[in-house]
Length: 424
Image (cartoon, rainbow, N blue to C red; front, side, top):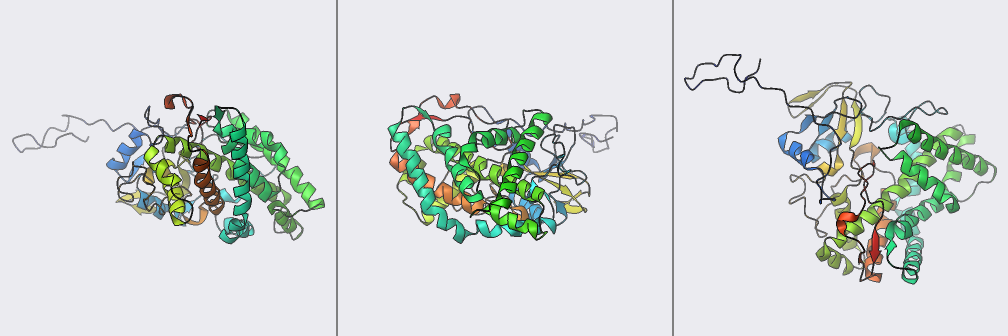
């Protein structure tokens, strides 16, 4: 039996029965944010970071994976081939119950949740479409869309919900053009995307949302087999005839790119605006920046500060790994909360301060290692155009409600705001 104090004041060992220490309770994860601190990680999470590099946490299903609290350790593990992204690996810490797809037999979202070499094989097929040079060619078109949406804001009623009128339409329009998905179906795919990313819905609702989206995109793939266009899904369809991909593979890749391509950027636009309106000195600083490296740096700092994927990246351990004097055993799970890693004072001095002049390039908002976000060049470009345009064209932009009344996505895998009523 362990004791609180092994020695009496006399220097003799204490009786083993005295002062027995109860093992610390394993905390539940994810944890609630502090009221009134919508941009900061939960205080309990920060306390764990100060306590140890590895801490056990309890998930919704009773499993107890390791929580990795420090920036450097998160990067090391995300880049380690002994760590698996496959949700079917023993010990994988699922964020919610998800049934296997009746079409594919697994619950992953295409290559994002497969390991190399299959992950690398499929990822290579779409990498060129997200190459920086290709994305930069889209910038003028994105700028035109941003200006059109702002023109509509200026001509419309006030106050307005910035999510519905601007933050959600913009990345939806962009990813639809890139993939070849008809934008007129946006209500359908946005609704199902939200359901897939909500932790508060039932397993059946989440699975149904994913299946409806997959069936819709499977039908679109079939149409593009008959009549290919100048878009990414049509490019992938060309690989079906070669035997490199099945129609189901292409549909699942399209689900991933469609959901990730609009939900994350939409949340960054709206939550970033909310954060800037609460930090007027930084908003003024951003308005003064036209473009170039300073604007790009401001985007990186907002990505670090907000870290909207806030339920931790999930991995399973394939072989024993030593970390900080602790052995992580094969078959155990890892939760790597990038929101916590991005607030690690060892990596970012004064990490709770939003500082648009900071060099934040080592943040992990897009993950790290072979599975880091494929679409990050597109997200960066869109955010640069938005943050570089919206606040200059709406210099009087302000919240139309009390900040405490902004509804936050505490129940989502991706964090953000449900609505952002603004005026100017």
